Image (tube, rainbow, N blue to C red; front, side, top):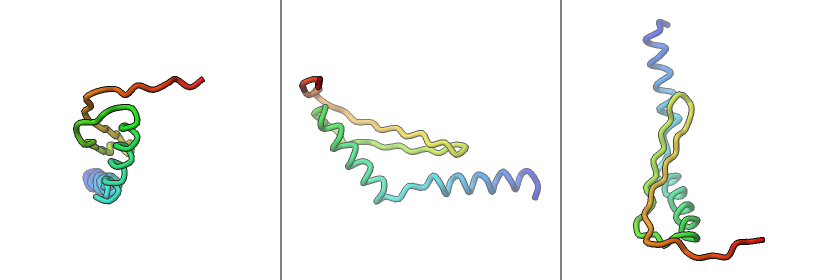
Length: 75
């Protein structure tokens, strides 16, 4: 197999691994919303971005909040 074909196979494998099902994405977004809502009054839904490059995942979650909730510091 020449280098060009080997590179293409590698890219296909990486893109297959990067695929996140809609159900999985919805579950992660739901979990993040629940956790972030403990600390913030959210005004927008979580926007989740998952990118896989060279076998390394970069996960970015964005949301907006109108305030930070007050909470006591645990000792």
